[in-house]
Amino acid sequence: MPAQVSIRPERFGALLYHFGTRRLSFLKSPELLKVVQVLADFPTARAACTDAGVSAAELPAYRAALATLAASEMIRERKPS
Amino acid sequence: MSTPLPLAEQFQYGLDAPICLTWELTYACNLACVHCLSSSGRRDPRELSTAECKAVIDELERMQVFYVNIGGGEPTVRSDFWELVDYATAHHVGVKFSTNGVRITPEVAARLAASDYVDMQISLDGATEAVNDAVRGPGSYQTAMRAMANLAAAGFRGFKLSVVVTRHNAGQLDEFKAIADRFGAQLRLTRLRPSGRGADVWDELHPTAAQQRELYDWLVAHGERVLTGDSFFHLAAYGDALPGLNLCGAGRMVCLIDPVGDVYACPFAIHDSFRAGNVRGEGGFTGVWRTSELFADLRQPQTGGACTSCSAFDACRGGCMAAKFFTGLPLDGPDPECVKGHGAAALAAVDLELVPKPSLDHSRPASRRAGPVPVTIGARPPDRACEESPLAGLRL
Ligand code: SF4
Ligand code: SF4
Image (cartoon, rainbow over all chains, first blue to last red; front, side):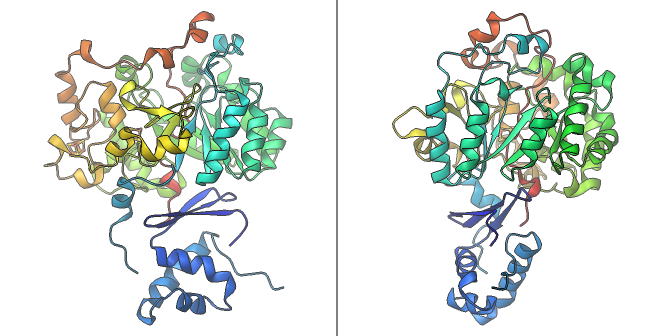
């Protein structure tokens, strides 16, 4: 997640705000928030989802949600270190 | 993924912190008026001090309020304005401010362009000099153009060109869009609300029914490329919903802090009935936002009253609370600009004597009355960076 993105947990999940694009976004569930929070600690998004307790059946929905976030620059591929 | 309730329903119960917080820093020069500017600096003695403002910013940082909208005519008349902007941005609270452009010199523009945490909104009431200056005063069109040119030259991309849609400029939407495009700005259209100076001005200036229809079609055609701050959701009753949450955010995700620290449910609801508390109180702003009785009330499911039976209720939800209040309509009935015509009918039955006036001690402070008479008073709506949720940027 870029440094310009701020994340605020809310009852329904979380609100995200990108200071660079000045766009607001939502995480529609606490589970998705968990995924986003641990994303950087895992080699793949799938591993992060598994860690957050996402079932196999739910994976496609999470993939779509993460793709949407990536498209709005809320998350991005980590820089090779 | 499990989503028990649609977001609009979730938001109805309120958020832990506002999304759209408007903060009017000073009473001095709240109008974009030459005469007001000349009497600038006469602040209300009760205004929050620099230290008190910083304490509020500290709270906002803890609450993770992403940004504040600094409203008013010229917030820069406060001598500590830049100090507060720097303090806020250093504490991860972004600042969006609204200006008529008079102080946006090339130097200021360069400084603004350098920060991710600052956003700007230049207000214009007409796409032509004649239409604009008739309302905002001679020279104001050129001032705004110069400011936008300076911002564009400084490389500030995507600042906002903000237009309150009125009867006089509703036919100029394409022209406004062209101006915004020319400067690399984003056009933001918002609704004229009968707040502040009551219903009289609104009567003369609010778009006609035919203009509303054209506006709706224009907004649908332009989609997310034009921002509206979700302010035209009452038009959704024409058909397709417009981008955004289509929900009155007052006290749920929207609020106002005024110069003396009073907290209101919405920047358009400056009246004792909508005052939730003061940031100087024991619990500070956080306490007001989270525990005030007024906000708890507003976060209850609202009844639609006469609107409940309307086929468009899901989209329109009876429209804007402030617009109803200041035109004397019941809060659980139709919006005065109800596209089905129910508002006009209801308005005809309103006893003008009983229409609530904004709380005078706040909207007409002594400092303003003491100055030269502001000739444009009543002629133009106040500039507000954000009158409700900025959800035109919403990505669900
Ligand atoms: S402007 Fe109207 S609709 Fe918007 S938050 Fe205020 S009262 Fe609600
Ligand atoms: S009757 Fe009420 S819900 Fe229906 S369009 Fe009019 S204001 Fe909206």
